[in-house]
Every structure is written in structure tokens, then in C-alpha cells.
Image 1 (cartoon, one colour):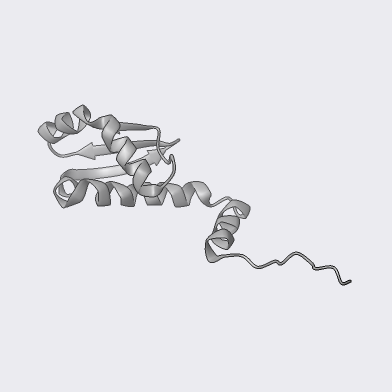
Image 2: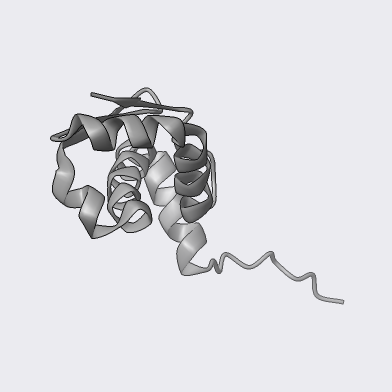
Length: 99
């Protein structure tokens, strides 16, 4: 009887994930996805109030124009973190700093 060789076929998602891991691009890709998720989850009104945003060591740092908006977002900080992580399907950020 002939032995079957394991198939080297992969889905596109598996191939992309392997590529990101092999060339150490996963962190930068995740950071870019977090920045896009901020806009998607919080919507256009908050996006207009956002001056700058960046990700450092799984911490999303956001600067806002309005102190009123900042205080409102601070009250729901844990919910925002959970929503962004849920939107991405994994724990991409652990904390949120608003300035």
C-alpha cells in the first residue's frame, strides 16, 4: 500500500500568519490593526476629536482635542479595551492611556 504524504496546502489565513511570524511583522501588523479598530469601534465623532494615536507595548496611547470627551472615555476605558480586542478577535491591547 502506498503511504500518503502530508499535504503542504494551507489556507490563505494560515499562510499570512506564517509569513508575519517568520519575518517578525506580527507586532507591527497588530499595531496597525489596533489603530484602525479605534476608528471603527468609536466612530467618526470620536475620530474627529483624536489628534494622535500610537501603540507601545500593547498599550494604546491616544491624544484628544477635548477634555470633556477624554473624561467621558476614561469612564468607559475598560469597555473600550474589551470592544477593541473583541473587534480584532484577540487580546491586542492591555491598557489605554488618554491625553
